[in-house]
Length: 117
Image (cartoon, rainbow, N blue to C red; front, side, top):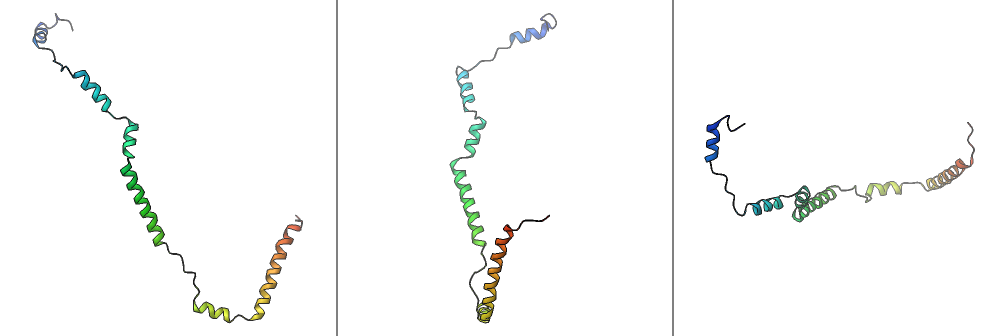
């Protein structure tokens, strides 16, 4: 737009005073730029010591509750188990011993045989 196009507008613009800047304007702008945090600083602030301690405490409580609520089946023998053991015939022990020998022999001979396909 040329000044000759709208003389009245340019006259009004010529009479309006310009903006007045504070003597500390540059200093204030630089301070704002320095104060603006970067992504790294925001992430570092998010992982503050207070939050890490709280998250660790919650994790410890959750693990403790999981351990406390998970109770394994008792390995103690009951009186009925003792009755069953007392009723075993001594001849059964010989049969079990013979079965153990048979299993051991079978495991050793499986590797010695050559497969026939």
